[in-house]
Amino acid sequence: MVHETDSSRDRSRRAFMGTIGATGLGLAASTSVAASSDGDPTPIDSPTVIEEPGEYELVADLAPEELEQSGCIVVDLRDERGELINRGEFTLYGNGHTIDLTDTEFEPERSRQRLGGLVFNPGRRWNELPETQWEMAVDDLEIRGGGSGISSRLAGGGAFTDVTLVDNGVGFDSYVSGGGFRNCVVAENDTGIVLGGDTEVWGGAGSAFENCTIRSNGGPGIVVGAESQAQIETSRIVRNRNGILAAAQGSSTVIERSHICHNEEYGVYGDAYPELVVDESESWPAQEARVQAIDNYWGAANGPSSLERRWSDQDTGYEYVAPDEPFTDSETGRPADGDGDAISKSLESGVSNVRFDPFHEGPLEDVGAQR
Image (cartoon, rainbow, N blue to C red; front, side, top):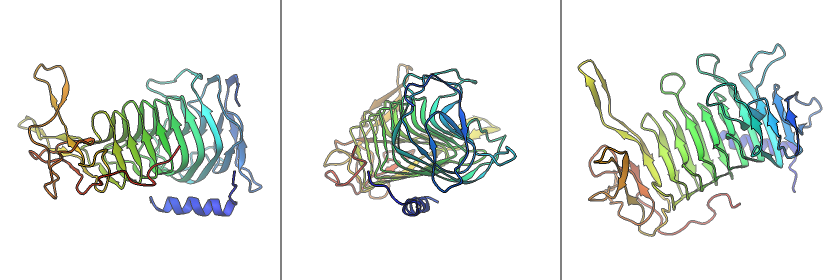
């Protein structure tokens, strides 16, 4: 293993941030740790609550039998008076170790609470606490078997490098947070990545993906929620039920120089809702996602296909059918009549809300994390 100097690690981390604005443990009552004062990262070898900014490193694999806290490593930064910190720096070096929650028992304190491998800002809600603006980074870590691999709430985003999230309920679950992902693998989770937004209070999550692999997730690979943004480059989004789902309410998604292949239903689906008139005093405006997905490979030389999602005539749910005519690119007019992954339609008849032209006719080199 090549060990970088502290200065080179710091430079690399800051450069990436700038692009995006105990195996066999029994009952694991958490240990609270403080940042080291000697300049070296603070070692972590058991389930932990981190309450001080600074650098930390995992020095052992963690596979607790039982946890009382909501995550194996909980990051809940506070000052010397015990009050929550809303600005600061936090770094966790995983050193290639694994957090495995596959067999961990956990009793949630509230409904829908998930056990996470790494949890930032547990329990924060928009009406309780201000949004944080940490400069946080996680490097060279694998998390598997949790309700969520990494959970982040109102944390302002971070830099995640060489992180692997496998066999979790949700690989990365964010609420108005997000971050930058480089050389990461998110695979075989129920859902890969959720970038959750809030249309009424905060806005959304902003994330950038570079050289990542999002594959074989049981549901969507990436959900770009309301008011959220995703910039995806040189990545592989393959063999998920749906590659990317983009919300109609103010989301922004750009995918370039990537593989969008072999996803079961849609390669890229953008929500679209026509105007809804309830009565004379109440109506909802039309809304739809707009996705730019040019210069990608769709799994076939002739590009993406068209697929329409419509309510069944039997009133039994949605069905997916090939339209009478393929949808066209909104700028060039080229039809999505290929054999590759499917794209969705917009509110405009016959037109897709996914821009796909031009596209690559064959696979690209050096795309996605190769592991």
